[in-house]
Image 1 (cartoon, rainbow, N blue to C red):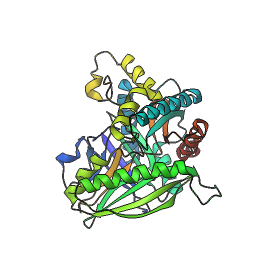
Image 2 (spheres, rainbow, N blue to C red; image 1 turned 180 degrees about the vertical axis):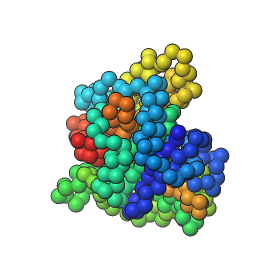
Image 3 (cartoon, rainbow, N blue to C red; image 1 turned 90 degrees about the vertical axis):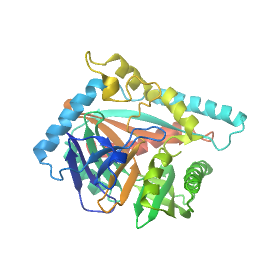
Image 4 (cartoon, helix red, strand yellow; image 1 turned 45 degrees about the vertical axis):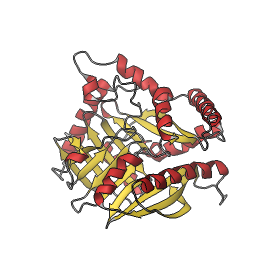
Length: 371
């Protein structure tokens, strides 16, 4: 059973749904439901129709446990969290790549370095969802579960694209610091990161024939951390808006710049590719895991799975809301574990130790609630 539970930013309404069907968004225009994608360029948007908006507590827990069990057959729990020394070595490799790009004449380079942390899951998924709603009222709080992708939960602060009354709204969000830092000014490294994302979004909208209106940059609070953000709006019809979701995702805030080359680098070198090797060596006999989950056995796919992908919701009114899958984790309920994901933008100005600490801050969004 495919299911979802969400709460839109600054709303008190919980929306949930379930369906036997897992299909693509393009096959169901105008239908209410939840959509998501894996981390990949021009992603395919998977869709869970809201066929039934009532889920009992017992069924909710039962279906999540069954989905996690099936998904774990092809995507088992990694042996360990990303080690500090491995993450720092990966940052050094990124900076070497960026120097090579600069020698080729590419300016303003950036690559996102992600890592995982495995922790005990001491609360039920429903309880964790409710606590995320209470702690982060301005975030998009989500939980979705399928047999192909397992169960994901999080509180995303980053709007990818929304559409209402013929107006598109997106958010350029990059740069991170502790929410209690006294300085009112952002350093050059964070401003450079945010500028790369803003330029990418406005260029993508312009290529679609749209004129952007920018508001910012300004400081956006996201719980324990703050980000540098710019609101971007444009007039457009709904079909243009839907088409832009896959063209924008993943933005350089989730991948890097130049985008295609950054995604290729991430797929090949990111430290959590250990996850890929484990999947390839643990395919259950008799199961076609490549069909079951498109990540398995495909070197062109990234083992971030859904982290950094798209999550969103469509309404019967044709309005839609989409967000980046951030501040999130994947549940392994049969083993009472959770994999937490976090990443940060690396430039030639980056300090590897500070970048590790930045991911620690971001992981605290969920980690503080599961203790």
